[in-house]
Image (tube, rainbow, N blue to C red; front, top):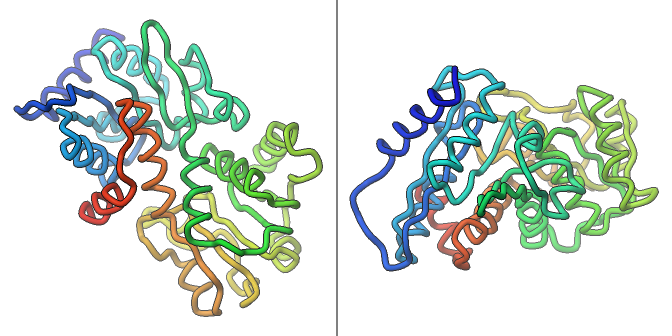
Length: 303
């Protein structure tokens, strides 16, 4: 598909998503680009908070699965969004790392993480930011205060996994073992992020070795989503002394969290990260500070 054709497809999506209305806070046009995103609650959080603050807020789903688009069309859609006056884009699976090639600037945290979930458009500028990392860290502070941070094992080294690993190290984890189905990806993550946290992150390939020695476990893979049922490792390895966090929010209680709760573990669902990443992105898009409590209500109302 040509760039002009992508522009027209995006224009059609905007026209379908836009509703008559006005707001004293101005007009904001943003979108989410990814695959299989029709059930995302992010649009509802943004639009409802935008309305509460007086914005005419239009949020467009750019679902490559629904549109039948190849991954190679990403650049054309980023071009189209900027040309149509979007304030920015949220970016999700599978584009959090590939979108880097389409940007002109990276926020320091996004550069360190090597993944972007929020793109902000300015005058000729496409700035990549990462609100996933802050969102996970804020959620962890809220729900897991006092948890031991000496040894943690994380499953998943993709775009979201990179953001979570960075957050964990910023939170004070002293020994972070990363396991991924693609060992080269976990090695690349450890090398990239490890430059800023010497000796704190390493790779592992054996859950049966890493889980028993860890105090905390984090799932940053898609395993556990309705689309990818199961657990990222055998739950027999979990004991009551572990704390367990999952970044998945649909379902709210994954098979991993269910098994961990049954064993008496302290658990953290992905809902907090989902809300807080949106809180930060909303401010980047609008310049207005959203209300966290209100955004949480919007998230729950979208269920």
